[in-house]
Image (cartoon, rainbow, N blue to C red):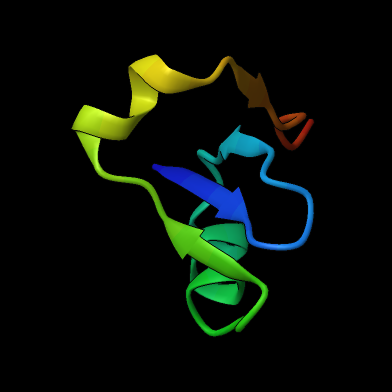
Length: 50
């Protein structure tokens, strides 16, 4: 799932379910719709090693 940091404008691809839930509840982040993806490069978050 893609999230945009509202303060920096950076878009992150988040794959960890716990992290996704945290960002959904954080006012500093918003979910990015598919059409917006092509406007800006996407940063990938590190995945959990387990």
